[in-house]
Amino acid sequence: MTVKEYETITQNKHISDQDSEVETIDDILAQNLLAATKNKNGKLSPLSRIKILLDKDSTFLELSNTAGYNLYPEYTPSGSIITGIGKVANRFCMIICNNYNIKGGSYFPITIKKHLRAQEIAETCGLPCIYLVDSAGAYLPMQAEIFADKEHFGKIFFNEARMSAKGLPQIAVVLGACTAGGAYIPAMADETIMVEKQAAIFLAGPSLLKAATGEKTDAETLGGTDMHCSKSGLADYAACDEEEAFAIARKVIATLPESFIAAGKNSLFDKNTHQHPAPKFDPAEILDLINGDDKQHYDARELIKRIVDDSDLHEFKPLYGTTLVCGFAKIHSHKIAIIANNGVLFSESAQKSTHFIQLCNQRKIPILFLQNITGFMVGKHYESTGIAKYGACLLSAIATSIVPKITIIIGGSYGAGNYAMCGRSFHPNFLWSWPNSKMSIMGSEQAASVLNQLKMQKIPYTELAEKHNPSLYKDQIKAQYQKESSAFYTSARLMDDGIISPLDTRYYVGRCLEILQNYNYASYQGTVSRI
Image (cartoon, rainbow, N blue to C red; front, side, top):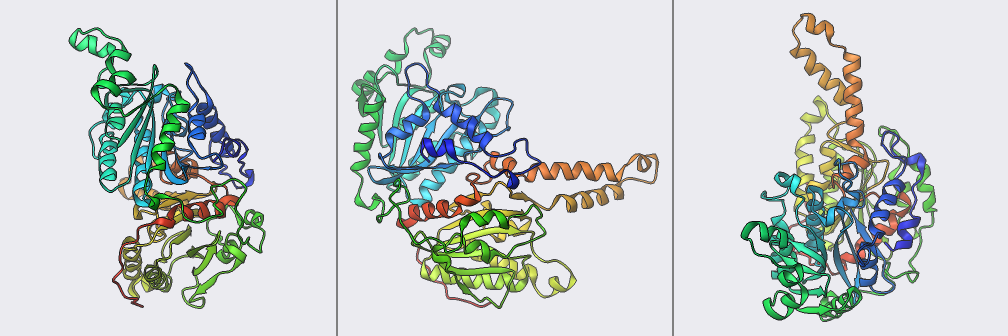
C-alpha cells in the first residue's frame, strides 16, 4: 500500500476483537508506520526506500502487517521487516526491506519466519525478489531460536539459491551494514548494488575482527562499496546515494524477460486507473452481516454478492450439500471459483467441494476459500455414513490441487474445518484474516468442558478433588482460548498474511488474482469424480 493508504486505513470498532489488547488494528498500523518512517544517520526511512523503488503509480501490497505484535519483550513492529509486492519497471516484484530502526535490522525468530514466507510467496507466484538490505544479522540473545534448524536463518540463503536456479531473479540493494549471516543475502544475489560510504558487507565487523585476530581496520576498508566493487567482486554496481541505487535496481529489473511483465491493463496496482464491473450490492453492507457469535452463520451468498463483479455468482449444485456454497464468478474481471462456508460441514458438503475442486483443476480457475467454519458434523450416524472418509477426500483434493488458492478467514476457523477450507497447512498462495476472525483447535467453551472432564478423571476423590473449582478452571481455559484464537494473536505469529478490513476484501482478492495471472500451472491428468 502507499504511504497515504497506510496512514488512512481504518477498521470498524464494532467488529474488532473485544478481548484483544487493542480496540482496532489501527493501533498496530500506527506503531508500524512510526517505525517504518523514521530515518537516521542520513538514510532514507524503510518506507521511503520502498516508495522510491516502486513505479511512480504503483501501490504496495504489504504482507504480514501485524507480525510480531506483543510477541517479545522487545519492540518488534511488523516483525522488524517490511515485505510486500509492487511493480518495478512494470514487473511484479517481492520486496523484502530490513527495518534498521529495530535493533539495527536484526533478525528475530518472527523476522526470519516473515522473510521465509515472503520468499515462499515469491516462489509460488513466480516473482523476482528485491532485497533492501540493512541488517545487523541474527538477534544474538535469541540465537537458539534462530540459527541452525531447518526453518531458521540459513533457509533464507537456501531459498535464494533455489529461486535463482528456477529463473527467478534475486537482486540485492545494500543500504547499510550487512554483518555475519546477513552478508550472505547480497553475496548470494544474482546482482548486487551498494551505496558508497554507507553500505558494508563482511562476515566479521571491525570490532569482532580485532577481538578474534587482533587485526585493526575500519568498516569501509574491510567491506565497503569500493572494495567489493573493485577488488572482491562481490558487488556489481556502486551508487553514490540511495536514490541512484534504486535507479540502478529499476534498470536491472527492466532487463528481465517479457514473461515477468505484469499482464493486462487497468491494473489495481496503478493508482486511480482501475475500472471494473462493481457489485450491484453495496460492499459497505458487509459490516451488517458480521456478528460476534461463531454459532450464528449468515448466508454466505449475501457476502459473495458484495464482493464479485455485478454480484453475479454461477452457483454449482445449489440444492446439494447446502452448508457449503460453491460457484464461479469474477472479481475485478478475473475468473474465480468460490467455496464459502454456510454452516457445519456434512458428508454431502465435502463431496460437493471435492467435485468442484476437480472442475477448477480441469479449467485452471483459481479458488477463493471464504472460511467461517466450526468443523465437521460429528455423531454416531455421521461417523457410520462416512464423514471422516469424505472429509479425507476433500483434504486430498485441496492438497493435490494445481490451481492457485486464496483463503480469507471471515469468522471462525476451528479444528479440521480449518484444513478442509485450505488453512495455512494446505499452502494457500495468500491467506488473509478479518479482525473478527478466530482460529483454534476448538471453541473456548468446548475446550473448557473437555479439559475439565479430563482433569476430574485424573483427580482422586481426596482433598485435591475438594480443592478443584470446576467453574474457575473453566473460566481460565476459556480466557486462554479466547486470547490465543484472536486474529491479533494468530496474525502476530504469522498464521496468516495479514489482517484486512472486510470492506477491502474485494480489493485484496483482485490484487492477488492480478499477481497470479502469470501463474505456472502444472498439468492436470485427473478426471472429475463424484466419489
